[in-house]
Length: 417
DNA sequence: TCTGGGGTCCTAGGACCC
DNA sequence: TCTGGGGTCCTAGGACCC
Image 1 (cartoon, chains in turn orange, purple, yellow):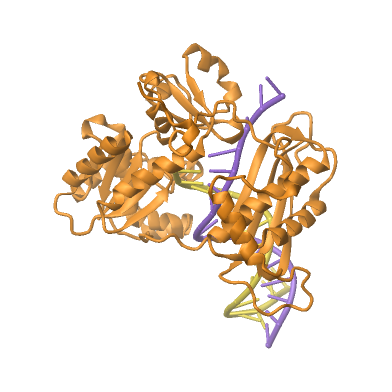
Image 2: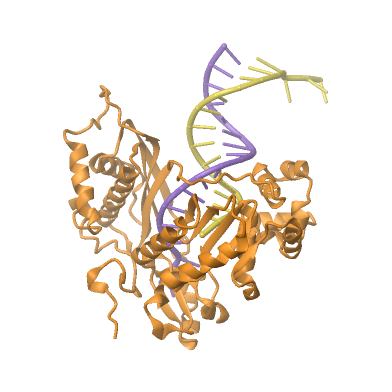
């Protein structure tokens, strides 16, 4: 039996935690570069603001309804997430942190599932101020659906236990297929055109038919809806297969130098993440693009990859390769908006034997240097950086509505009284 | 003027091999 | 009129998730 616990309007809720003056006011949180809406509280949803809407399109509504706007404050959300996860660890022998605001709990052997769900809710509210929904079911997909129901119908008290097959069927019957986890817009449309209009109808579809007309992924979803657990519980995060660091910039970049600075910055960040995973990579790619929405310019998006002969985790090797890749795709003209670096082809260790033809030979004391660098930057990101990154002024992202880091920076501690 | 970032998995198709 | 069959590896693209 699984529980899915997830925080209601997580980013928006974090922002209001330390702002009691915002009680009952609409609040939204924007994506990086203040691009579009990624989170809304209940009042903002009532004001008709949709998730994913570009900010510039809703400016009028924001003013009319007095919506409080925030830029993404990832330091705050990550810290609040860690607090929620720590509480959940106390409730189950195994917890899978599925995303920043949700986790699956293994509830095997628990007698009173509904009571446990209520207790989880109560404790998280008491210790963090955040409200969670709890969905309980014999498969992850059903637990997701139960969680969805817990949020949608307040009468449930925020906890829905679907261990009873009769209740499963009752909920499935009133849910459209596109509300099911793993079914997005495209699949939802195709499923509807086949005359399947409820999650229950989908669950009762012939498996062979689904596999033939769709794929094995949807077949698994159908099995999960029937209560057959097909998705593994992953207490320990599997090893990453790729790492991407990229960002849009507030200013459009038309010169080579600032683009190169951004490439250096994202290469360094990606290398830092790679070392955090204790991995070495053999593939480094750089991509650059202008805005696909620019009406005065053709869309230009290009990437190039470099394959190294020796796996590395040294920022200097990765930066050098990323710049070589940049030079393969750089052309003057486009007003560049987004620059990024991707790492792939991971190994759990570097190759001890030096390849005769490799220009990226391991450097003397490189590991120790990187360790020192990471140790310094763990005390606060950006304390030490490579000169190639520049100061960041030219490629920084827009964050006009950033809140204080209430819980992670002494200078930003909220004042009481 | 202004539209996010970071991932995963699956499939189709081409290159190549015997 | 009339294509061999079976396999692997790689990449691009599509779909999904939060």
